[in-house]
Amino acid sequence: MSRTFFEISRLEHVYRPTEERLKDYSEVEGQVLSDEVKRLASRCQNCGLPFCHAMGCPLKNAVPDFNRAVMQGNWHDAWERLSETSPFPEFTSRVCPALCEASCCLEGTGFGATNVRQIEKRIVDTAFAEGWVKPRTPKFRNGKSVAVIGAGPAGLAATVKLNESGWKVTLYDRNEKPGGLLRYGIPCFKLDKALIDRRWRLMEEAGIQFHGNTEIGKDVAGSYLMKHYDAVVVTYGTPVPRDLKVPGRELGGIFQALDLLGAMNRMNTKELSATTVSGKGKKVLVIGGGDTGNDCGGTVLRQGAVSVMSIDLMPKPPTERSEHTPWPMWPYQLRGSYAVDEGLERFWGLNTLRFIGENGQVTGAEVVPVKWEFAANGKPAKFAVAGPARVIPCDLVVLAMGFLRQKREEVLAALGLPDQENVLIAGDAANGPSLVVRAIADGLKCATTLC
Ligand SMILES: Cc1cc2nc3c(=O)[nH]c(=O)nc-3n(C[C@H](O)[C@H](O)[C@H](O)COP(=O)(O)OP(=O)(O)OC[C@H]3O[C@@H](n4cnc5c(N)ncnc54)[C@H](O)[C@@H]3O)c2cc1C
Image 1 (spheres, rainbow, N blue to C red):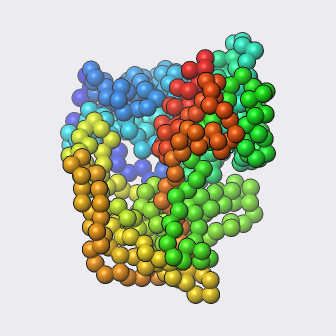
Image 2 (image 1 turned 120 degrees about the vertical axis):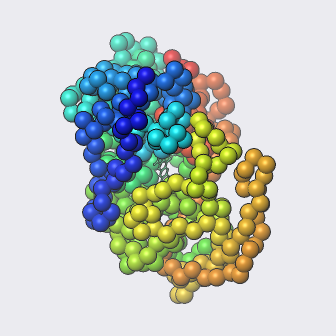
Image 3 (image 1 turned 180 degrees about the horizontal axis):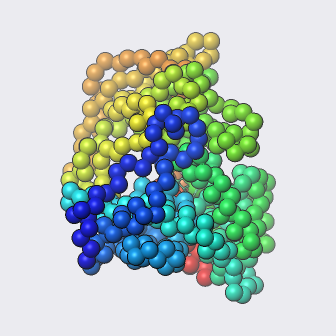
């Protein structure tokens, strides 16, 4: 068992300086050099019961194994171990909240968890630089064909696995390019879209076909897919955003988060010449204090917003791990955010009553503070008004309140598909809004049931 964690500290700060990164849309995280990563990997205890692998990581990445290989400088071995379980570590190593780190045996000891995500990132970046990442081509074709609806991480993962197993896979997406929320949701400064293009080239080389700009249920009927393919896999995410139906919602200047984020990403990758939603020169109010809200904050700050604040109906999470989510569970607690460091102000326990406007444009949001009561399991249960209403002045409102989970029958009805065995649903479409790593794991699992 390694005991270097006594001497070597966890790496806490990997971000580029705020004043530098606010001027561009390049990834906010800086590079951690190989020698430093080897030192970080040596902090892994190779514990007898690695919760990171067994419980933390939905992909069941063999974290202690690749940590040991990295510590010994065996980068190729580390890559082989990582790529056995993870089809797209270049994505997860940039956007995953690292469930593995929350369940690391060093977490909560005062020494700080092993920096698994940074180690994963250096392994996959090295693998690409060394030319070790190859198309995953099938050894034989099984004569069967499958249509995958939705080219987000779940669809991409299912596609890779099915293609490798001999299925002829055709991937459909209503967007022009593959990636789903990796491409049109998560900002470029968290995930460089060139990494999706690079991965997609390998998938094309492996024989996968993509039909972009094709909305199933509109441009192509579900019945057409049922007629022409042996199976259909639905990975179309959660297409319906939660709305805020309060008076004044119809005013100009109120947008959904993906209107802002999608347009900005398209502009950054030259799919659009100008963005259709901008915070430039505006007082921006983001409604929703989660990751999407943070991404909206980071985006409008780069666009040149005068100010940006986010408000959330829910109570402020505790600064320490809640007693209801003990180690090795994923902790309910307040998390730092790159966007807060950049200037986003966050507030909790505020309910939005209505939007106020002039000449058809939003000029403010009336909010009221609320106090929450908690259930026995620690979850916020109900709230009551706890003070006078006030108006927050703003001229751009971004709704970042999540997406609606659909039932299986709603998904099938939306796409005109029958409820039968050869129609599978995976990723956010099956489980509701979640994480990239869970979507990938579910896409793989779904593909395995067909293989
Ligand atoms: C702004 C934002 C930031 C996020 N940041 C993170 C993060 O940092 N880390 C993290 O782990 N998770 C993050 N998430 C969550 C993560 O992106 C999702 O959980 C994940 O992308 C879900 O993958 P999926 O493949 O199930 O669906 P999606 O990524 O939503 O992909 C679904 C695809 O289906 C397509 N589609 C929809 N309807 C049709 C149709 N009728 N016909 C054809 N195609 C269709 C869509 O165009 C889309 O490309 C974030 C989410 C958002 C919104």
